[in-house]
Image 1 (spheres, rainbow, N blue to C red):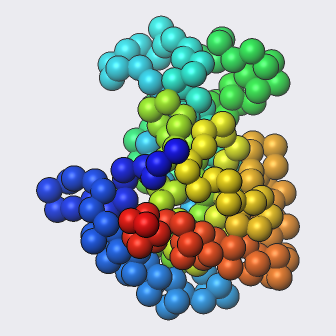
Image 2: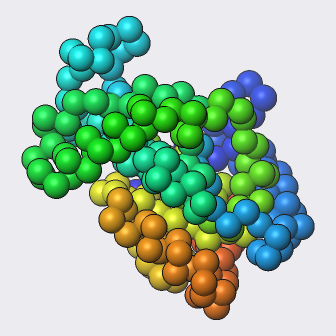
Length: 236
C-alpha cells in the first residue's frame, strides 16, 4: 500500500502537493490548539454528499440497488438518519441529498430493514439532514467528535479522513472494509473509536461522559497526524 494522492490540493486543483499539505495541516493544528475540548460543540460532525449511485433524473421508483458500489452511500444514509433521530449528539449532514432507496441487493435482512427506516426518516425530514453551506477544514476543530464515513463512489477510502487526525477531536471511524497504508498502526480505543449504525449513539454518549477516555483518543489521533500523515512522514 502507498499513500493516497489526496494530500494537498493546490490552486490549480491538483492533488498531492506536499508543500500545500504541510501548510494546510499547520493551519489545522493551530486552529485545534485555539479550541480547547471544553469549548467545543459536543456533536459528531460530518459533511459530504449523500447520493444514490444513479444518474441524476432517474425516477426514484425505478432506482436500482448497487451492492458493492453503493456501500458508501448506504453508510452515509445511516449516519444522516442518526442526525434526524439524535440531533443532540450527531451533526452528520449532506450537502447534496438524493439517498439510495432500493435495498433489494442487501443480503442481511436486519441491515436492509435498518436502511429502509433510515431512508424513510431522512426523506420525511430532509431539513434536518441537509446543509448546503461549506464547512472549512479549520471549522472541524470546533467539534469534539469528527466522523469519517466511507467514500461516496465505491465505499472506499474517503479523503476527508486525511485532515481529521489534526483537528484535536476524537476521530470516529465508521466500520468499513477498505485499508489505507497506515491502518496497521491504528487501534480502536487508542487512535480512534470505531462505530456503526448499532454502536454510534452509545459510543458518543460514553465518550461525552468519560473525559479521560476522550482525552486519550485525542492524543492517539494527534500521534497519527504527527507520525503517519504529516507531509514529512509521507515524503519519507
